[in-house]
Amino acid sequence: MTPEGLIDILRNALQVAAMVCAPTILFGLIAGVAVSIFQATTQINDMTLVFVPKAVATVLALVLFGSWMLQMYLGFTRQMILSLPTMIG
Image 1 (spheres, one colour):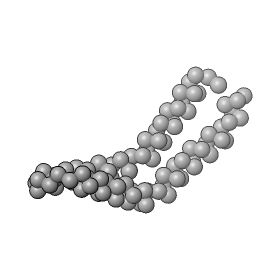
Image 2 (cartoon, rainbow, N blue to C red):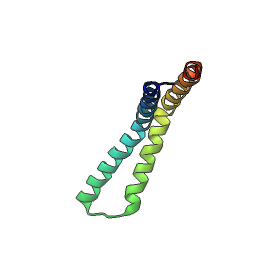
Image 3 (cartoon, rainbow, N blue to C red):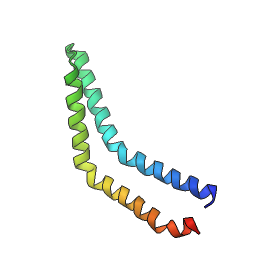
C-alpha cells in the first residue's frame, strides 16, 4: 500500500466520522444556545436546565438520523472490505 492510498483511506474515514457526528453536535449546539439565551433573559442559573435539553436534543438527533448514520458507517465499512484485495496486493 502506498502512502497516498493510506492518506486517502484516513481522509475518507475522517470525512465519514465528521458527517456522522455532525447532526448530534448540531442539535446539541442549538439546544445549548437556546438554553443559554433563556438563562440570560430569566437569570435562572441551574445546571440541570443546561443538561436535560442537550440530552433530549442529542437523543432526538439519534432517533431522526440514526438510520442514516448507520448506512454511512455500513457503506464505508463495505467499501473498506471490498478494497482489501487491492490494499494488500
